[in-house]
Length: 235
Image 1 (tube, rainbow, N blue to C red):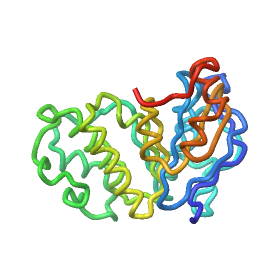
Image 2 (cartoon, rainbow, N blue to C red):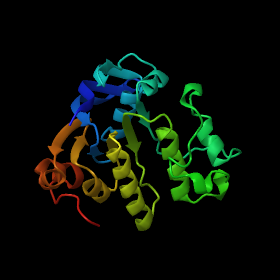
Image 3 (cartoon, rainbow, N blue to C red):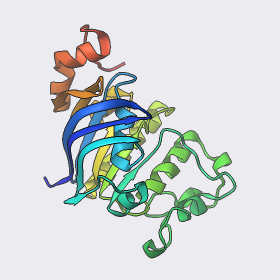
């Protein structure tokens, strides 16, 4: 596989606090990489650092050969890096199609709700949508510019089992188009089910990495989550 995103010796934080230290990994085209870890491990800070929202940054990040360090968030997006946020904040006075249109660059053409699987709700206001539909719109906004790399921050939060299954299929379809995906979620079973490989962050550092089965059995993962008891597994 082709490495689209390469992260080397990344250190990052917010305010005056360094939260992430010495993090290195790659994301390959068409693959889904999971990032898991206990609360406070630094997962969202890592995404913030990659996308230009961290106030402390050191190290290097290359997207398809281009160095992103020092670029503003919108410039990184133009290079092909997109993300979702934990909060599903939409423009409540605008229909779904209009919510998509406001994040579309003039050169990118109109928002294609059909391509994004949102045609059926294109004319509806956010207040009339289910949680899963709002999440789909938030994901659609990240996909508008056809990114090369997609960072998903807690996309399964608040979803019921049926919606989680649909999210799994949706993520695999996006990866099938050659997009490199980093999935951060507290639902570790979802991560193990959908990801090709998994990274484990604890105390701001990667403590384990590998295939889902390898990571599940890693003692460092058991220690990070449960103080050495047993690895995260099906609930």
